Image (cartoon, rainbow, N blue to C red; front, side, top):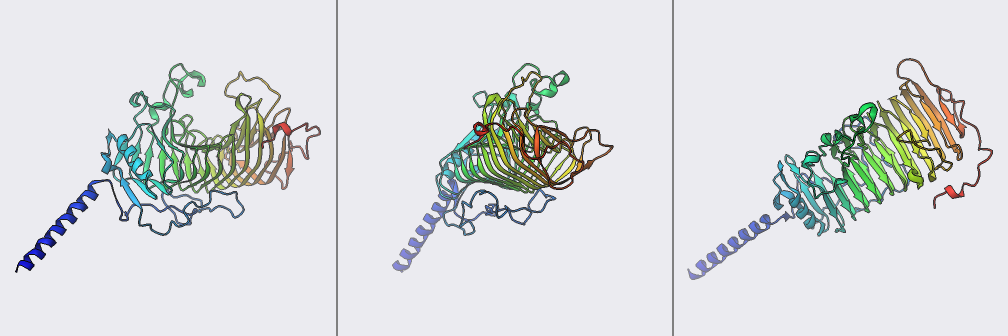
Length: 481
C-alpha cells in the first residue's frame, strides 16, 4: 500500500513539473513545432502560382544566365529540428494598427537572429505599426522575416518620430542567407508624403514649392548577400518601394508592388552597386520606374515582369555630377510593359564617365507605351543643364522581339547619344511597334547612334548608322574595371 502511494505521488509530481515546464516554454517566445503558415523558401522560381496572378507564365532563370544567386539553402526541403518561430506577439506586439509595435519587432529580431533558421513571424489578421528600424546582422544563416499580416508605416510626416531617419523606413543591413517573405502586405502610407509642397505636382507648371522634401524609402537592403524576397504585397511607399545597395546574390520572385500612377518617385525596385540579381514573375504599377538599375550594377536578370502604369524599366540615371557609372550584363525578357511613359530606357547625364554594356532586351510586349525604346544621353531635370563633352559610353545593346503599340505623342524609338561618345553596337531584330490609336506623328529619332538592323523594323529606322563611328577616339578612359 505504501509503495502504491509513493508511486502515485511520484507520478503526480512528474506530471505537475512537466505541465509547469510546458507553460514556461510557451510563455517565453518560441517553440520548435512546425507552423501551418510558415512559407518555404523556393530554390528557384517555380511553375506554381501564388497571389497575385501574373498573366505571364512563371519564368525560371535561363541556363546561360549570370549567377542569380546560388541557392543558399541547399537542404531547405528537409525540416530541421532546430527551426524556431518567433511570433512578435510573444514579445508584446499588439497588432491593432494603433499601438507602436516597434520594440516587439526589435526584440523578436534579436532572438531570431541568434539561432540558425530562425523565423520572425508577423501573423495574419493583425496590423503591426512600426517606426523606422534597422534590422542588422550578422545573424545565423537561414533567417526568415515572414509577414503574413500587415506591416504599416506611420501615417505621414506629422506622425513620423522626430528622432527617426526620414531617408528610410525598414533597413536590412549586413545579412547573409536571409529571406523576406509571406502572404501579407507591407503598407507605406505614402499619400501624405506625396503631397509635400516640394513635390513637382504641387507647384504651378510642374515647379516645386519651398518646404521640407525628404521622403523615406520603404525597404532597403544594404551590404548584404544571398537574399530572397518573395510572395509579398508592397504598396504606397513614400518614395522607392525597395532598394538593394551594395548587395550580391538577390532572388526576387512573385512580388506585387503598387502605388498610384501620379505618386512621385515611387520606383518599384531599385538596384545599385549590386551584382547577381534576379527579378522574376512580379507585377509592378507605380508613379515612377518599375525597375531602375543604378551605377555599379552587373549580372541582372529580369523576366516575367508585368510593368505599368509606370515610367517603364530604366537603366540610370547614370553619371550625375561628372561621376563614373558602370552597368554591365543586364537582361530583360518575357515581360509586358503597359500604359507607361517609357518602355525600355537608358538615361545618362552629360559629363559622366564609365560605360553601359552588354544589355539584352528580348520578347517584350508593349501596350500603349510612350518612348518604347529610348536612349537619352542628355538627361536633365531642369533647363539649366550645360552641354558637356564627356559621357557614359553606351555599347553592345540589343533589342529583339519587341512588339506592341505605342503612344503616338512620342517617337516609338529614340536614340539621342552623346556628341563626343557615340552609342555603338546597337542591334535591332523583330521590332514591330504600331500606333495605339491615330497615326504616326514622329519618325524614330537617332543622333550619333551606330548599329545593325537584322530584320526590317516597324516603323522603319533609317537614321541608325551602320558600322562603327569613323572617329571613335580613346575609349579606355570610359571602360570599367
